[in-house]
Amino acid sequence: MHIDVKICGLKTRQALDAALAGGAAYVGFVFYPPSPRALSPDEAAPLLAQARGRAKTVALTVDADTALLDAIVSRLKPDLLQFHGSETPQHVIDARKKYRIPVMKALKIGGREDIAAASAYEGAADMLLFDAKPRPGEGLGLPGGNGVTFDWRLMAGLDLTLPVMLSGGLDASNVAMAVRLSGAAAVDVSSGVESAPGVKDVKLIGEFLAAVRNLEGVPA
Image (cartoon, rainbow, N blue to C red; front, top):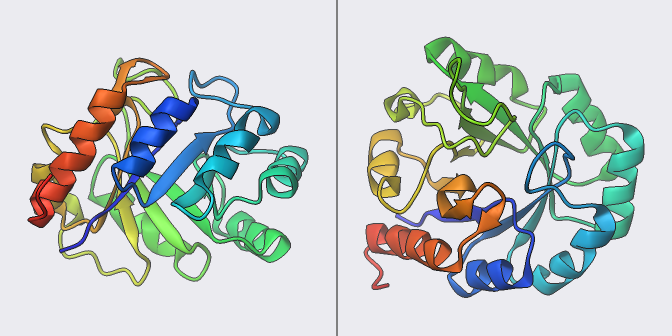
């Protein structure tokens, strides 16, 4: 079973190099100023140029206004837009039509009812990302990168036509169990490969990617 990996919240050439060298299928860049992983389109431009053709580039926004989305798309031409806020299915449809770029919609999962709600995005998004819904007092209070997990068994037997990426609290020590319990064919990591919020650790990136390769039965 092949598992695609997305390393998200990249800010430096060194971290991006580690993600690309390790075989990440997706590399993500955050455009949400409250996040410690945030970049401006100008700051991100050389990184996306470095990754182009080697991995799919993902631009993550949170309830972004039109001006920011326009700047991201025109300046960076990412392969995928990731909406990590309260964007409605219609908002996703409108963005796909306007920008002609696939959209991955992130959804917060706390229980079975959140899984059921994902069906509203069938026919709207190109892909879904299931992230953990932090409980009171957990995480950093941000839309993503909180290092919090949810019950991965909720994903087993999903009745969705959309591909789903698993996120939330993953690291090299638990990604194998997360994949086994969820059945996910794609995983996303951010805080799980950091030495501090927003500071990617090259060694941890390598360990995470090696853990996924080992799960696939490919020697690290």
